[in-house]
Length: 236
Image 1 (cartoon, rainbow, N blue to C red):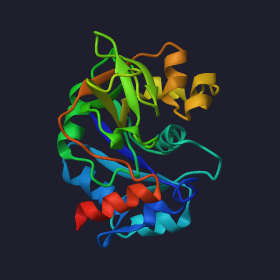
Image 2 (cartoon, one colour):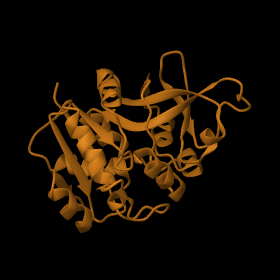
Image 3 (cartoon, rainbow, N blue to C red):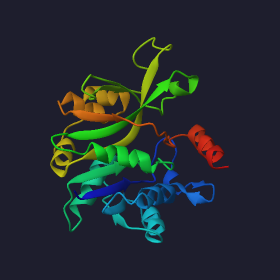
């Protein structure tokens, strides 16, 4: 099975502008992500997809990168645009977020392990006991059914008043086959997606299944100044 890892990255983050090039412990965030994915040796190819020349020039110094359009694309749309520019086809595309500088090989291996058709979309979750930190809006929570499929994602704690039990935290990495990816990027924004600012709700509202696997490995996205402080503390 041929698998490609694509890392979308752009400068125009609303919460933390320019974050792919932000230095974390002497290395840019995007370089940390790229090296973690490449060094896992789990992919036939790894590329960064970006609309920004600053990111393109930076990544070109150490890895493979594709320039995408300046259209206001989300990460999933940017991954598909980059995929269309490739001269090879792959069985599955893994979308690794450009703001996950501490993504682990175990997580990448976990998601690849469920990349089997007819799974439409795959992602990871991690069981977490309640803590105040879990209430941060940058940490997505998810509830699942008894088939290990996502039922709903939220920035709020779900289920409601569940503090004495475990939650599932979403690890923001996705895998899809090219046909499914083409279908979901053509969907219009949905009401739940707009409410939560989470595009995966668009897929659920349109009856796509999202297969999940529970991983034991943790990581976190750097999406705010608060997250950046946590990241700097993590490497120091």
